[in-house]
Length: 187
Image 1 (tube, rainbow, N blue to C red):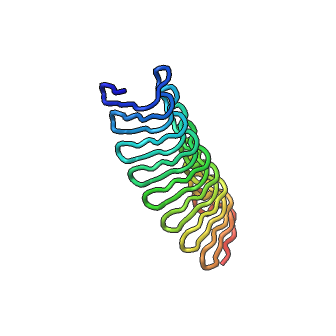
Image 2: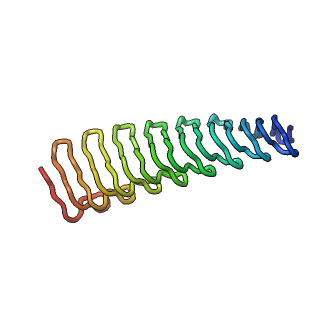
Image 3: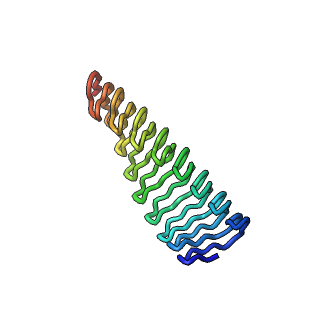
């Protein structure tokens, strides 16, 4: 079937609707190839964008749903679970600069437990809320420094211990990323 705007569908039909395997060539240059139910992507399919981005995975009513792998033309990549086109559950995201996150997602954001690894050998393992370190976690720098404690909105807040590579340590209270309140400094 060909439409006046250039959209083309090749595949199986039932009750005058796309049903079964097929290919839908969009006028924009995008292509979906996979399973359809009642004119919607449903089941396993591959969506190729005209700009080179691609999604391979499962669909429900035209939305990414279930396990899938998505690559963008800037070479960033996500593989994991989707719920109604939103990253939800376990997943891994790799950025073009080499940064990487492996962990839980909710509403397309880092939410829950996860490990973030920066390309310069820093890492954070702990709790996330709305793309920020929030809750209990361990942050390690490439030069050997370590912080274990509580975070609020990406900043050390609450109790924590900061260890320097040379053996010095601070154990105590933090607020807005700075030592604040009662604590012990060990030389």
